[in-house]
Length: 160
Image (cartoon, rainbow, N blue to C red; front, side, top):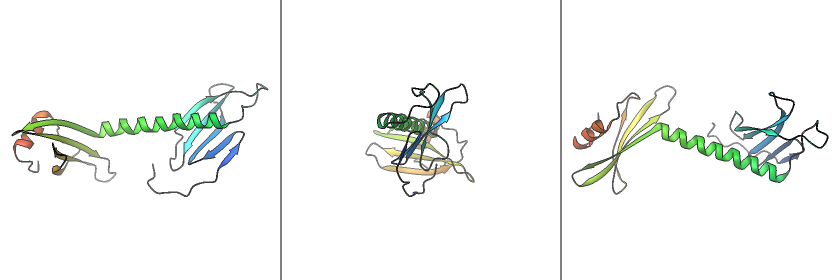
Protein backbone atom coordinates (compact mmCIF):
# COMPACT_ATOMS: atom_id res chain seq x y z
CA UNK A 1 0.00 0.00 0.00
CA UNK A 2 1.38 3.39 -0.94
CA UNK A 3 1.52 6.20 1.61
CA UNK A 4 2.01 8.80 -1.10
CA UNK A 5 -0.96 10.97 -1.95
CA UNK A 6 -2.10 10.57 -5.51
CA UNK A 7 -4.24 13.15 -7.25
CA UNK A 8 -7.93 12.37 -7.34
CA UNK A 9 -8.99 10.72 -10.55
CA UNK A 10 -12.02 12.09 -12.39
CA UNK A 11 -15.40 10.53 -11.70
CA UNK A 12 -16.61 8.00 -14.27
CA UNK A 13 -20.10 6.50 -14.33
CA UNK A 14 -20.35 4.10 -17.25
CA UNK A 15 -22.57 1.00 -17.41
CA UNK A 16 -19.71 -1.39 -16.52
CA UNK A 17 -17.16 0.94 -14.89
CA UNK A 18 -17.62 3.46 -12.08
CA UNK A 19 -14.93 5.55 -10.40
CA UNK A 20 -15.71 7.93 -7.58
CA UNK A 21 -14.00 9.19 -4.40
CA UNK A 22 -10.89 7.04 -4.86
CA UNK A 23 -12.80 3.81 -5.53
CA UNK A 24 -13.44 2.03 -8.82
CA UNK A 25 -15.70 -0.86 -9.77
CA UNK A 26 -15.33 -2.71 -13.05
CA UNK A 27 -17.41 -5.57 -14.42
CA UNK A 28 -15.18 -8.45 -15.50
CA UNK A 29 -15.82 -11.89 -16.94
CA UNK A 30 -16.17 -14.45 -14.16
CA UNK A 31 -13.46 -17.03 -14.78
CA UNK A 32 -15.32 -19.70 -12.79
CA UNK A 33 -18.52 -19.75 -14.86
CA UNK A 34 -20.36 -18.03 -17.69
CA UNK A 35 -21.38 -15.09 -15.50
CA UNK A 36 -19.92 -11.77 -14.49
CA UNK A 37 -18.02 -10.42 -11.50
CA UNK A 38 -17.20 -6.97 -10.15
CA UNK A 39 -13.64 -6.01 -9.27
CA UNK A 40 -13.43 -3.25 -6.62
CA UNK A 41 -10.21 -1.26 -6.32
CA UNK A 42 -9.07 1.57 -4.07
CA UNK A 43 -6.81 4.23 -5.51
CA UNK A 44 -3.22 3.66 -4.38
CA UNK A 45 -3.63 -0.10 -3.79
CA UNK A 46 -2.30 -2.28 -6.60
CA UNK A 47 -4.49 -5.35 -6.01
CA UNK A 48 -8.30 -5.49 -6.06
CA UNK A 49 -9.78 -5.12 -2.59
CA UNK A 50 -12.80 -7.24 -3.43
CA UNK A 51 -14.09 -9.40 -6.29
CA UNK A 52 -17.77 -10.25 -6.11
CA UNK A 53 -20.31 -11.96 -8.39
CA UNK A 54 -22.41 -9.65 -10.56
CA UNK A 55 -25.79 -10.24 -12.13
CA UNK A 56 -26.77 -10.67 -15.76
CA UNK A 57 -28.83 -8.06 -17.51
CA UNK A 58 -32.32 -8.65 -18.86
CA UNK A 59 -30.93 -10.24 -22.01
CA UNK A 60 -29.30 -12.97 -19.83
CA UNK A 61 -26.06 -12.48 -21.74
CA UNK A 62 -24.56 -9.11 -20.84
CA UNK A 63 -23.89 -7.73 -17.34
CA UNK A 64 -26.46 -5.55 -15.63
CA UNK A 65 -25.35 -1.86 -15.67
CA UNK A 66 -24.09 -0.32 -12.42
CA UNK A 67 -26.25 2.02 -10.42
CA UNK A 68 -25.51 4.27 -7.42
CA UNK A 69 -26.87 1.89 -4.74
CA UNK A 70 -24.85 -1.06 -6.08
CA UNK A 71 -21.65 1.01 -6.25
CA UNK A 72 -22.21 2.32 -2.70
CA UNK A 73 -22.77 -1.22 -1.40
CA UNK A 74 -19.59 -2.50 -3.05
CA UNK A 75 -17.55 0.41 -1.66
CA UNK A 76 -18.96 -0.14 1.84
CA UNK A 77 -18.17 -3.87 1.69
CA UNK A 78 -14.66 -3.27 0.32
CA UNK A 79 -14.01 -0.66 3.05
CA UNK A 80 -15.03 -3.19 5.69
CA UNK A 81 -12.66 -5.75 4.14
CA UNK A 82 -9.78 -3.25 4.35
CA UNK A 83 -10.66 -2.30 7.95
CA UNK A 84 -10.86 -5.93 9.05
CA UNK A 85 -7.56 -6.72 7.34
CA UNK A 86 -5.85 -3.75 9.02
CA UNK A 87 -7.16 -4.78 12.46
CA UNK A 88 -5.94 -8.35 11.98
CA UNK A 89 -2.54 -7.13 10.79
CA UNK A 90 -2.22 -4.78 13.77
CA UNK A 91 -3.20 -7.52 16.20
CA UNK A 92 -0.64 -9.87 14.68
CA UNK A 93 2.06 -7.20 14.85
CA UNK A 94 1.46 -6.17 18.49
CA UNK A 95 1.45 -8.19 21.69
CA UNK A 96 0.43 -6.65 25.03
CA UNK A 97 0.62 -7.68 28.67
CA UNK A 98 -0.50 -5.84 31.80
CA UNK A 99 2.02 -5.95 34.63
CA UNK A 100 1.56 -4.64 38.19
CA UNK A 101 4.66 -3.48 40.08
CA UNK A 102 4.99 -1.37 43.23
CA UNK A 103 1.36 -0.24 43.16
CA UNK A 104 1.31 0.79 39.50
CA UNK A 105 0.07 -0.87 36.35
CA UNK A 106 2.11 -1.00 33.17
CA UNK A 107 1.09 -2.13 29.73
CA UNK A 108 4.12 -3.83 28.21
CA UNK A 109 4.00 -4.00 24.41
CA UNK A 110 6.02 -5.74 21.77
CA UNK A 111 5.38 -4.16 18.37
CA UNK A 112 6.84 -5.76 15.26
CA UNK A 113 8.30 -3.34 12.73
CA UNK A 114 8.08 -4.77 9.22
CA UNK A 115 11.19 -3.18 7.76
CA UNK A 116 12.41 -4.78 4.54
CA UNK A 117 16.09 -4.29 5.39
CA UNK A 118 16.15 -4.27 9.19
CA UNK A 119 13.10 -5.99 10.66
CA UNK A 120 12.95 -5.45 14.40
CA UNK A 121 10.53 -4.98 17.26
CA UNK A 122 9.93 -2.25 19.81
CA UNK A 123 9.55 -3.19 23.45
CA UNK A 124 7.76 -0.47 25.38
CA UNK A 125 6.07 0.16 28.70
CA UNK A 126 3.17 2.55 29.22
CA UNK A 127 2.19 3.47 32.78
CA UNK A 128 -1.35 3.72 34.11
CA UNK A 129 -1.39 7.46 33.29
CA UNK A 130 -0.74 6.68 29.61
CA UNK A 131 2.87 7.91 29.57
CA UNK A 132 5.57 5.91 27.80
CA UNK A 133 8.05 4.93 30.50
CA UNK A 134 10.53 3.06 28.32
CA UNK A 135 11.01 2.02 24.71
CA UNK A 136 13.79 -0.16 23.35
CA UNK A 137 14.55 -1.71 20.00
CA UNK A 138 14.82 -5.50 20.20
CA UNK A 139 15.30 -8.31 17.67
CA UNK A 140 12.24 -9.68 15.88
CA UNK A 141 12.76 -13.03 17.61
CA UNK A 142 12.67 -11.42 21.08
CA UNK A 143 10.99 -13.86 23.47
CA UNK A 144 7.96 -12.01 24.85
CA UNK A 145 6.43 -13.85 27.79
CA UNK A 146 4.81 -12.74 31.04
CA UNK A 147 7.96 -13.77 32.93
CA UNK A 148 10.19 -11.72 30.61
CA UNK A 149 7.86 -8.70 30.86
CA UNK A 150 7.72 -8.96 34.67
CA UNK A 151 11.50 -9.19 34.92
CA UNK A 152 11.91 -6.19 32.60
CA UNK A 153 9.52 -4.02 34.64
CA UNK A 154 11.03 -5.11 37.98
CA UNK A 155 14.52 -4.53 36.62
CA UNK A 156 13.79 -0.86 35.91
CA UNK A 157 13.09 -1.09 32.16
CA UNK A 158 16.76 -1.51 31.24
CA UNK A 159 17.61 -2.33 27.64
CA UNK A 160 17.19 -6.10 27.27
